[in-house]
Image (cartoon, rainbow, N blue to C red; front, side, top):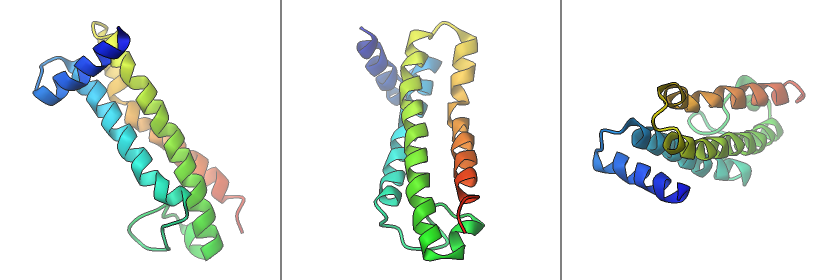
Length: 127
């Protein structure tokens, strides 16, 4: 039953429904899936040092070893927080009448701040 509501929420958002829960559900799923898709090449070590894609903090540019270590770790952390967003999406359907829960869920993507904190913490251990 929950899965049917979840799918209806996604379809309602895509079809232009005026229900906020569908749009919030769509937001969380979309950002979560994109986050995972962008993280997989980082985890696999497929991203060479560059200025446009990857975990681009000063410590990453100190050496190739740092670049790959930070990108691998950062990809895993970003994947983890993306999965959290995917797990939050059904709450938009479950609590569709609760404006407080809906309001908090809109800010779900802000959880990536915790991912960046974890990455910076990891970077402190690198040479």
